[in-house]
Image 1: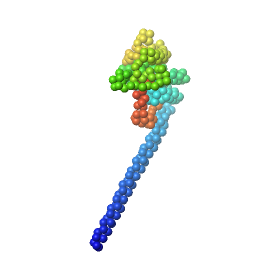
Image 2: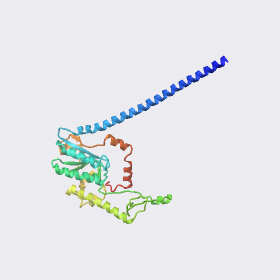
Image 3: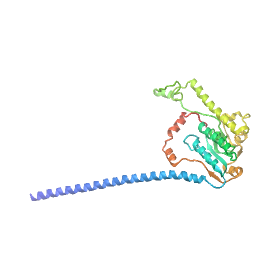
Image 4: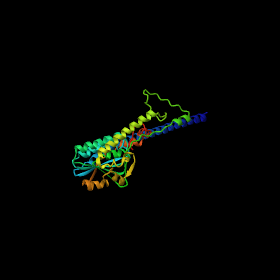
Length: 325
């Protein structure tokens, strides 16, 4: 009896010991989990803080970079697609232009262009602002320098400058308008899928790629593109004046693109040369100061996450209106 009681008592103590050990282990694991969560939280908080501080500091550094007490040539980059919320948006380029012209040490402005074009609206805004600033600051000349590509909306902008330069192998021109989409009507029929669209206007869905084209709507859309093309041509003629050999070469406005050497013969550009050449030999100030407004780190981060994917798809599908490219 005594041995059984001792055995029972020993088993009970062992069970209690195991429970205490189990509780201690669980408590340790929970503590580690809490510590890990707090560690992740504080690391994330530190990352956000540093990222925010960087976003605040970099624009200030850019401003310091763009400020100088010595005579200089102001440089403004126009790269990539000309569109809202892009690097070459009207807001950024116009802001850069104003800062460059307002700087009393700016002796000339160079627009270094490498772009296939883009929105006629954004291009028009920039064109108009260049012309306005040229009138307000007649002593400060604007020179467009085309590197690899200055086509369509990019050439629209360049034509507002006092002079245009390019490399002999640059691609210049493409004075035309495009609006591209796709037609999926037969594909829908083969798949047995029915398209249902409800609108309050007879032609509200005329750009819908899942419905058959109507001749009347096609004529209307062609008219919109022709009007935009006419506006483009008039602006280029106004900017280039008699230098543009349009009477002898009506194909200038057909959407074709030429090399820099050919463009010189057609009056699309004034001379061959790089940005550094223009700064040194034409403006007479080889020191160039970059006034280009660039995306903040937050903007770049957002784009990498794909926030502009919907806009890209809409542009690709032809739902954002005419495009100069």
